[in-house]
Image (tube, rainbow, N blue to C red; front, side, top):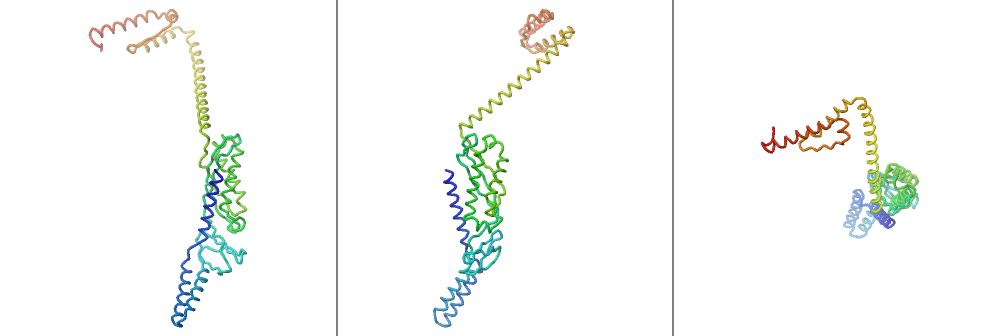
Length: 316
């Protein structure tokens, strides 16, 4: 799957490169052709012979092939009888038709190339699909034209193989959490391979890391179990701290029964002040702190309030 996609993209790159090399005639070439053809036409009219216009048209085609125009970001690789003679551009330049040819137009702008590694195994044998984007540019047009046949396709293949190499020696957890480190290593590895071709890598960005659905579910359950474990640990730690505080409070109440009674009365008050509240108190606490009378009085008051409300309505 990955090989077929890379083959398709390489084919597109070659088609785009071929389309770039075939350029429309510039205004200088058109002007020279018109002048040569027009001069031949005038000579034909004057001499009443078709030979001058034929010569003028042929000369126009030859002359029109000489002027070339390169854009500001382009460099033209010129060959003279098959030998490299230099770079031309930007702007207007001239070549000798039939003797000099332009083999390649080199674009020196930043180029983005998407590449992917499908069904690649990590170091812990987990299949992943990784999509990334490569930002690069040609810094040496001479090497890009002479050292490699198709530098765009070569860089795409180098990026894909480097990505598979990085994935093969990286565990899944590092691949998911350490993207910046992976991108830095990937940029360095690709740059080492493309430097002899006259290209430099500016940055590499990983767009997406896709893992199998079953593994995603397992990782989700693992994360949920880990969070539940942390919650239980926090709850247990809180219980221990509360127990220590109760122990410290018991020492304070141990030598001061009055404070203990006041605390007990406050607890009862807080529990009974709301209408309809129910308070459960152990019998041992009632006997040890003498709370029987207080509980009885509270119950009688609650009962009297209920009887009064039922006879006369709510008591304000």
